[in-house]
Image 1 (cartoon, rainbow over the protein chains, first blue to last red):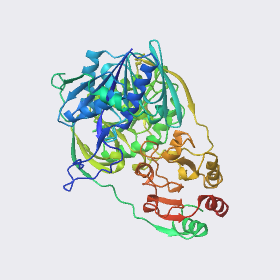
Image 2: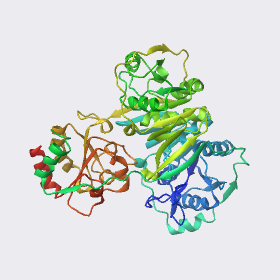
Image 3: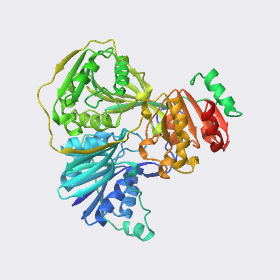
Length: 250
Length: 309
């Protein structure tokens, strides 16, 4: 079974992003970049499928700038076998990324595509679902457990109010939620080995994908700040304030 | 201009989250139709027809839609989409699953989780875990949108008298099938719909101590939530998580107990009307968003709070 895992280069989750002074976009100058945490969980799951003897090959794919190679190398250090970089200096929207991934899937023919449920930059939560639509295959988003058995995959999903389990025919797209696994740390020898693993580079134009933007970013701003309130002395004062000032309890 | 709302329901009842989408649609303007894709879902259609502001309810009733499988429901949405300028749903896990798939079928770049409507094609939405609000303008002919439920008031569930129409045909993509579901059973209100939420964090110490919140929740009719730290530590299950990667809540009263106030937690609750923080660390960031802060050991404060309210 061949597994394709898509990864994205994003601002590190510890960074608090701020708008640029002119408010046109967020300020990403000299900001630490990392592999999107949900993508890392997807890579880990692919590696576990290989360790269980279910996956034979793991191809890591990213759509992004040349610097995105760093995140491909992270995926390779975690255990992916080879990488594909769809190189572009433009910031692509989820639909355009899904179209690029579709083209890669058509040449790679993976049995299962693992992705993060969302990237922590745009917070769109769209690309996996869009890829599944474009490939006309089944999808299981927000996965917390994946069991592959022959030509099907059983996926337990984190949904509002609980868990739902679906069975999908392969090929299928599965997007990872937080609890799917806890990614390992890449060992130094594996980081060294990853540098020698092959990475192919292509472009959206080579893949025949029109990446023109459909949604224009008009500007960014900080959310309305909440004013800090007061400190109360004790529980009695707190309850009094809630009853008589805020009037939220009776 | 006309707007199609994709309703959220369980084949018996219209999920109140749908009412937030109706309000968002109302602020865009135009006729509002509601799609109910389900199985034996007549009662849902009747409830949707009664919602104020709805012109027409379209019912796609088939076993293929019984469990809202994205592969099947997205085909219905994509078939109807070209009749509308906007296709909207409240950003529940179901809608997040279905809407991007439908958008791709319509070759439209979906817009997720909008928090405000500026005009017919311009919207605000939180990005970077809510640290920044982006203003975006869509040039797609059919705009596929999910709305953040807490950012729009619920439309009145009564007062409307929409017509109900059946949609013929059935879309069964036969790519996936429903196996089972495990719905957490609780007498308490659902987190995202509760008027009062009381959440515990790592300061609770362990899962058993969460029982200290039960009596208070009972008295206040509150839902019980948790921070990601408490979930990661294994105190409570993930479906209790409030935060950017969990549930987004905006109740009238939010009580944060033993929660330090990481960005990712604040992103999930800072739109609450009144925030109370109880924490023994007076430097905890949660106090910077709290209307009322109590610096105290939660193991002393909680029993006293329960007996005083």
